Length: 219
Ligand code: ADP
Ligand code: AMP
Image 1 (tube, helix red, strand yellow):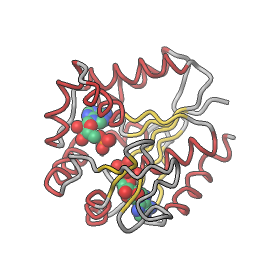
Image 2 (image 1 turned 30 degrees about the vertical axis):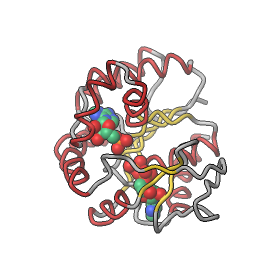
Image 3 (image 1 turned 180 degrees about the vertical axis):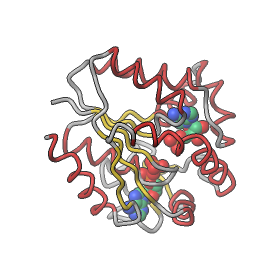
Image 4 (image 1 turned 90 degrees about the vertical axis):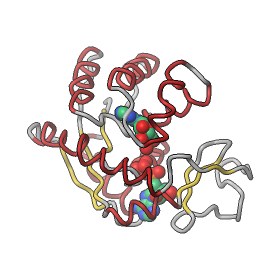
């Protein structure tokens, strides 16, 4: 059965970390609008050129752009693949667009999983975040170091990078955007009875277990 789930939570809550675990364990596909936009910036596409300054400031890229990216990506996947929305939707307009995008493709939302993490911990997580420059595997200066110092666990690369927007000032803007525009979409999904909350302060494995328990009854 095809699953469609949203991982919802502020920047640094652990959405990407958990999405990759679900990809590995269930063959689901992570649809991260942040990753798609960073790829567009890197490739210098018109969308990337437009998005760069907005992302560097920690503000939100336009609803039309991100919903367009999600629709295109879903079409490329076909209808049989289970997906995890990570960092999308982030506004009420995006939540509305997602409903249409899904129903047009014969899909429906199964779960919205909210990761709860305290704000101080978020700043700590984001300012310590880095990733492999070759394969994108995610790490943290204190909570998830590579097993061998400076060598990626997944691909063996020694090239690591940090996101330009992962600084304390931008993080505060991103959190304010989350509180003002993203948290208010939760009631839409609560009214449908599909929201489950997970303690995102727990260690990575325990958060994964809690998410697995939510997905288990659906297969
Ligand atoms: P998001 O995708 O929600 O912005 P990430 O998954 O990139 O967040 O996680 C942010 C940082 O926090 C990463 O460096 C990651 O390794 C670390 N991290 C993720 N989950 C946990 C956790 N449960 N405990 C401690 N650190 C975590
Ligand atoms: P993320 O990787 O989810 O932390 O996103 C990084 C940045 O990309 C955000 O701070 C926004 O500028 C932009 N972005 C990602 N997803 C969206 C979205 N759904 N809506 C608007 N902007 C987004």
